[in-house]
Image (cartoon, rainbow over the protein chains, first blue to last red):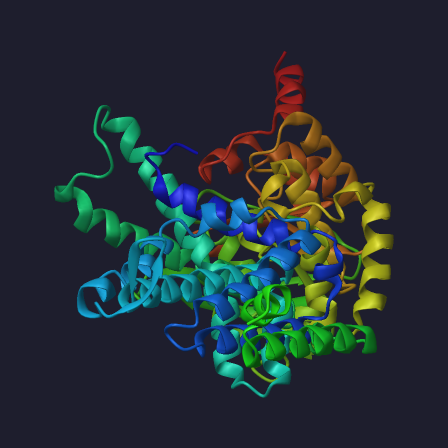
Length: 271
Length: 245
């Protein structure tokens, strides 16, 4: 897809997530419910670290790294998909060094302020949370995630909305991609859609997407869809999945409770 | 199997599409539905499935179409949409195929076994785990038909099934359609395909059935076809030229 067709590129990215979720690996075979709970636990624990707990937080990197290895998915794929969000995450703590100037320690002769540490902590928290969320969707089909949410008694409307939004967003992006291509063929030399055409472009996009979405919904209705996912999507969770998730959860909690790098340092060099 | 009695439908804007249509399709019958653009072919199919709220009476396999009977009617009638992209909404062919039966209470294992047998029967077992957006138009059409057959329908309705297919895929489609042992109602502009797949043809014009007869009779009537914005199928043109010569 051309780099001048962001809608097409976005559609391809979404489909890539579907393709990744269809792979087979130990991580993919882990049942959706324990995987979802584990991700929520991981994100909660990661975000709960104090603002100066950089060394303790760094241990949390092991989980996504290990998870991606186990899933056979390169971390680069994740960073490439998240390249538009990551700068925003990085920007969150950008001003901390200016507000918190108290020196915490010296790195050689260089004073390191609390602001720098808290900025790095915030940055890592964001990156870890995003990579964990991406790992979940890249190793679990959306129907599985929705099934797990159903098991957690999430409102059915919310679960259906999530499922349909994900399915329909590709419809919207497909239509936008086709229209952008048609536009660019008749507007050679232009980058993107000229502002004067935005109104009609968006109107047409909405109408065409609604038409296609209606056809898709009809197709779902004709195959017995009643607004709820079939029960079979909520497949039973094997004891092995629970055991694996339990071990990971215990390790995560331990990593949160104790500053493992500091303990290891003390053990090795004393102190 | 499918009975329409005085069925009418108008768009919300007021334009009438179906005007008192009455017809009867027997079990196992192979019926072609032809007509110019906007004649009401697709609307007629959608009316049978309750996708448009038409006036009049529609009966499918002995059950009158109403809000309460929609699940039964929609299970009894398989519908192959004109655009397969609109029909296949799950990531893979298999996911799409098992979606319907699982909605009707079948377990995933049973549904997968059924999918295997249907895909093998259609000669497209290799499509099972393929991503829907990565298969060709012809493969997608076969997958769409396989998806519809998963609910073991008593009749299948097809809207322009041969559109945008290359000759080889079109030939495969015709072979597949002919091998289905259930009633078929096929709406199409591809009159040659209708000639190859149907015994009976309904010609719809201005929202009414203007001709109903044996495929060769209706498709061989040049004047009737031209009056309704159609032309003789290529297969019949040779006969017509032969007759005149």
